[in-house]
Length: 296
Length: 296
Image (tube, rainbow over all chains, first blue to last red):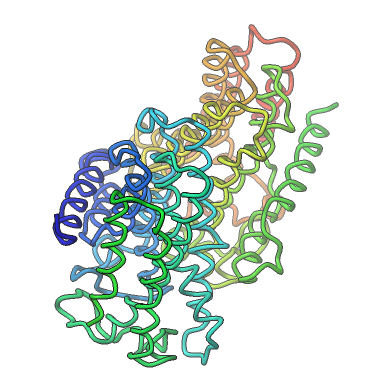
């Protein structure tokens, strides 16, 4: 299977699971459920859940068993996008080529839909009926690490620093903080919890955590590059919008070529973390390669 | 110990635990941590964690063991208040006699602080190091029930219907829905998870769940009554503000006297659920009585 087919297949599995695991549009109160589904099912590559399942398979685990947890990671990603797009934060009107959640449902419902997706994520992560074949203490630990990664010392902390840096000249350390915490942490923890739930031994878990850290940072750099070079229509959001807002980005600080080199290096480092793994880790290797190719 | 002393002692324990379990004000990024602490440590009766600990003790459990989970319930309560007060929702300037979170920290940080408190709550609930003496499967189940209770089919659902009912004439069923889901569900689940974590047997758990359901609804009715009759200074928020906004309340629909009777009846029913419990359930009995006394 090519990496494109791998992503397409993963996306199909994740989309179907999100559809099944979220409350239906007709469940009362309808407005919140329509709003949750609007954003959670608005497309996207499903990179985080695909990485999570790939990490589980790399250590001999079963993707089906970790699917609810993978969906939870995607719901967390969806909630962060809804809240980031709000007028009080990034004030974005478009997301993946569609009006942002608050543009369709209003700010109040958008705030609550974000809250509800985050809450639903933890409902899924702690659902022993869905995660029945994984030991409870492992599930608990994975949910705990996820909560840490997306909290004030993780994703939210990165977002705070990002907001507070807008329009300011920032140093490389701050830029790295924003990228590691705002985006990298969740990607890393997806790889890590996938491995944990898949039954990884300590040394495999450590290696996959390093893989996840490298690829998480690479992803944000690639995203910054795409914000500048990609065709607006293809990306479905305002190209160059980060630059207009004076957002801290790699290309703004280091230039395009240096950013590409940095991403390439991180991808190579991530793949080198997988040396002791067999062919079951090939999807993780391919995903890493795929990342950096997008920037050319 | 009188019920007032019991509340004071419980509040002291909970306040101290919140202070210890939340990141410090100087932890980076400072703004989010100051914002989280501002609201989580802004006072309040700490009714939810006190009920949770009392339920654990009623079945022979240890309040110290369930304290992190009790703190989590209070952090969830605090996050709902921050988000409810936002301009896009209730647009309140005052909460417990102090400026609301967004008035002090701005809307962006207030939204993210709410998100971070909710996330921190699940971090605490899934923290096996903190909950070390409770079996992992019980902790997982309790966290799962909490997530369900505060999601789109619980607290958030109630808030959605409340917002959508503003300024409209609503029927008694809708009013009951709002109260049960917006407030009652979390109170009930605090009693329930406290009992679970305290090692309750199925029949005790069922009885305490019924107690929690009655007292949860009673609390909201009492709150509605107090919104009308209490002295503004004492309550620390705009008295009669619900009425002004055309909010659905019990007194607005049934009148003050009928609402008091309904609260009294619910309190009696809640206490009758505790018949098979010994004196270790006395605090739960006293808390119920205390509720309804506040309305006179």
